[in-house]
Length: 343
Image 1: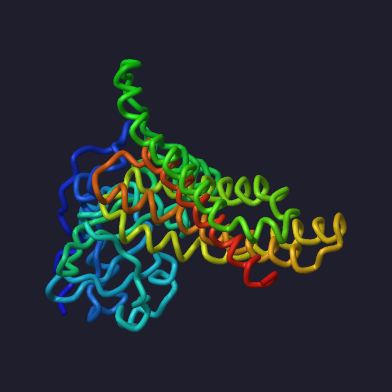
Image 2: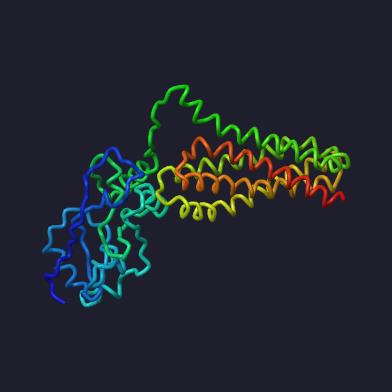
């Protein structure tokens, strides 16, 4: 291993110090160049010496380790490199479990990883895993920042979190044409709910008290569905791979959905029992609310993801569809549980 091997990889970058950023743009448009890299078979002393000889213009946060084919194989924090013995091999001190992002991913996905993991930079690779460069938190501000200062870091993470894309102005008629067709989903959902209620007329006759709580059950499932949809839309609107992101969101929503369902179901069930003292109906209400909230949470993620994958504006179409399907599922669940318990 020789010390004169290049420790800086040239990568393309459209501009530095970006103020206005299209978060749906691919990461490859914003990769930083002059990124310091190390090699696994270098010693720490050789690595430091080679870095000194290079024209490294960017602030160094991490040293990225590549193999002879320039594939990313690890990462070494600056402090660890400086504090280790000069004889130690880079391969022995590097972290092999390195998180990277594909160059075809959107800038929003990169900002989400930076925000969630509190990383100051993230390496970018191509389909073959070849290191292309980095994107870091300073690109989201309009000026260079001192990333050694905690306050500066916190400010930059705030900037990442508040980047938004403003909607364009449209005429009232165009607004109507965009929104009205999707409201037909609500009309259809309402008619289907009416048919469902008529089908379970015998259940309603046996448990009239159940009818009093139908508005509450529907309102809870709709509210939770809209909450999940709102959170999902913030990510899907900028993602180039909505289906992959949808599965990630489902994983995040499962536990909160379960906790919300159990909590709300228990509260309504207890209130119902205190009010009328009907154990079976109270149990049916609690189980139906718990199940409907879990279903509504998942619908609030799945529907926007599928709509986005079909290249339809999820902000306009997702709400009516989520509400309609959530209402139908909630009523079917409620009446079937009641039929099972009462019958």
